[in-house]
Length: 381
Image (cartoon, rainbow, N blue to C red):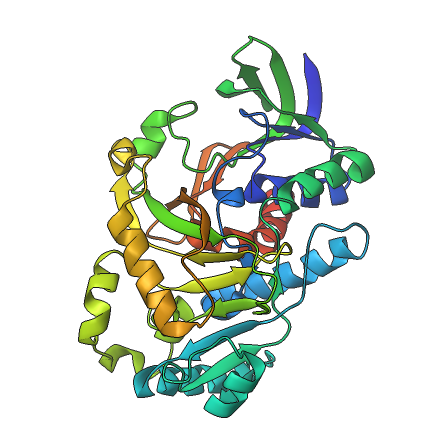
């Protein structure tokens, strides 16, 4: 039996940052991961950290996350690139929302700039002239490489903060007795700690399945594509489009949002939860996506592991409407999954010292660092 201050179950971005903040507070931390390495939500995404898309407390957590990312990047390269975020408006409705969000974020002293159609075309020569009306740009937001960040962060936790990391270790039981938490692996090894935080993503069948069954959580399936490296294409930063303006919660704060209608050419895209984003990776390839299909806990297998050609075609057709570069030079396509909760995150205390923190939805890369900091502070008050 081995003793720790904190055991974190799950080594995705949520679990890793809970471990980071606990270790920074001087706690002895163990992270346990069921797979060889993280393979789920944390690595199957764009790698965009965009507080500008969030509202309320999640906007605040996102702002703080940017600071934390930069602090770590100054010590070790975890692939943080301050390339900024841009939202291209394609019509007057989206342009009005961009202007209103500009006013909101200016009031919060969050750096942003409105760009005219001409400025957008000058800065992004791959952008099609007949698509863009204008844009709102956030210069301080960052891009990460999802296939690098979490692995480098886990290395940093072990090498610099003395966090113990156990991959290939499924936890099948977690109980509290006499103020101590015991977790038991599938190999019947027990680890003990003062507290445990369960950050298991959309894995609902190993620990506390009866709690998850009543949680109200759903799982979202996303289809994403990535081109071959395009050496003559340069589209810097996080690129979001008119569909993103119509979808992201930050724009819901705008006075005009409640009055917007869906144009005919968006209806089929909206049916599949499609909004088009681009992010160029360091090798020159471009990630394009994404779509959203949903299923509740207990029926997530019905989402399937495949990708629908029809959905990919819809995304590529819209991408061609926006950009000049050869979007159909696709090297790979995949389905990503993440858990989300109607209350933005699932927080459940199984006992005084066993805490479930999952279901953060599609904002994990943007907000987990700031959220985990606040959560660790609360749990150790």
